[in-house]
Length: 250
Ligand SMILES: NC(=O)c1ccc[n+]([C@@H]2O[C@H](COP(=O)([O-])OP(=O)(O)OC[C@H]3O[C@@H](n4cnc5c(N)ncnc54)[C@H](O)[C@@H]3O)[C@@H](O)[C@H]2O)c1
Image 1: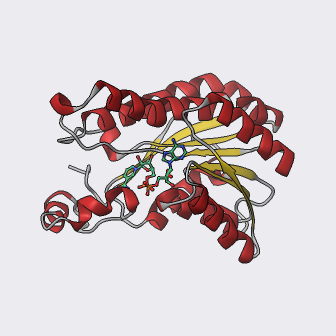
Image 2: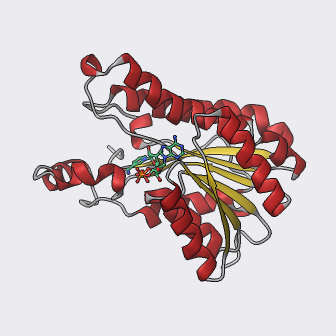
Image 3: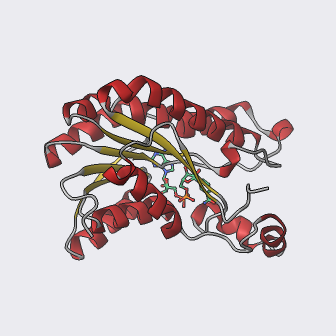
């Protein structure tokens, strides 16, 4: 219950879905958690849930694609906790369109959030992590950062970029005792996928593609995030942890 004792953590996009679940698990394991999200109501409600269960959390409104916001959030973490040890770059969006129908503006907005947001989450938290003597950055990619998929060229490209940026960051930041790893969820039941999973074809698609024959739950990904965030993974950096029910096993 105390694998994160003494650690201060930032979870971006912590208001809903997997970010919510990561925030709650990390807090339950003893971390002080900064939940940041562009959705204020969602973020505030997670913080309330953590604090009323006896944990320690604070909310920051945050657009990960805005550099000024990132600086403000990091300053807020230091003001609140006095330190920052772990960053979970989780915020992301999905646009489902084939390549030839993807608008230039859609490409840019998706890349600004999924890729530049992760870049900022690594770069602008660095001074705080260095000051803490090291730390762990967990970047949320996707199984679609490893294999292709239909109707999602921009998303797949963005998650591939997150995967490779993670490896490059791991190399650059090892000298500061900062580990950087990526997590690659398969299809997980969240707000992001609820439209997709509501379609009559969804269960057929999961049966056909996922060896465990079911979608994943956010908590099953949070367990992987906890491992990479905690000292349990003290010699793990530049790695990619797949949590996909066997989707990519073949
Ligand atoms: N759900 C899946 O099947 C799945 C699979 C693989 C990877 N992922 C990735 O996992 C992460 C979380 O996905 P999810 O399914 O929980 O999504 P979700 O849509 O349920 O939640 C995403 C959260 O991010 C926040 N957010 C969106 N844009 C933001 C921004 N610009 N700045 C700050 N916060 C922002 C939203 O308000 C929301 O709280 C994403 O990076 C997603 O790409 C999801």
